[in-house]
Length: 296
Image 1 (spheres, one colour):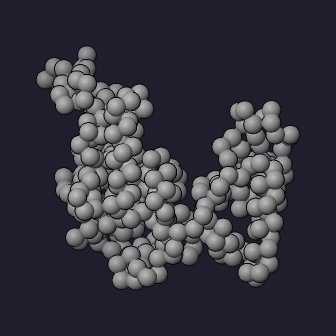
Image 2 (cartoon, rainbow, N blue to C red; image 1 turned 30 degrees about the horizontal axis):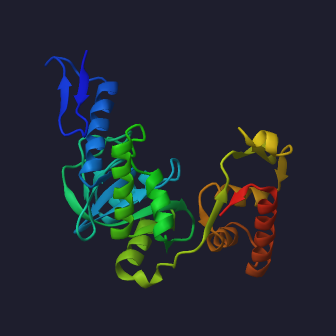
């Protein structure tokens, strides 16, 4: 049976297997994990992202599962002629100035990777939106995001400390943006135009907020109900029923977002004037805060 062995700092990684044995999924996972642990000592971040090459630079699309990072990357390939570097887990190497996106011989479900190294222009956290725009994240916001979307071996204290230090360096060297856009080629072209030709249109960083962990939204017989989970069940009295608009805002808040971007989402989704939408949004955010479900 194949097995993987590594020393304390993963400088020597050994695979024991018969020549005729085809490595199973578990053994490939162990090999990848060992190499990613070594990355921590080499100033390399293994990033959960879809990454493409666009001429002389690369861009990486990251974010929580289900938000469409692979779809946005594919739109750059199909609409702008970009080339894939990695469909899921590129290695990002820290440089004296900036960082470099590197293809690696493994991937997730996409199974797309190329053996190339390209300067990384930026990392983009994707959000679905009918309006195409880009917002800069502060260093602290970027660090929290990339820490969640990168490989950190928490079972190995020394390697984990190195991984966290690499993330801090990465967000200081490479811009991290929150990108609101659609999934199509025209949307990709609009975001490219902002990044490359009109960086003055990149919106400034804003304070963000989100729904606390331990609360979920469910649609039950056409009613939107906020339910506590885990330890919140004992502290939260019952459930809360939301109307359609409140449920829409709750869904947006499941990931960190600014008040300005919430307002933009409302205006895009509903036929309402800005003053009314802003007043309703502020009242709802205050209510969420009073309920104890909102954190900033």
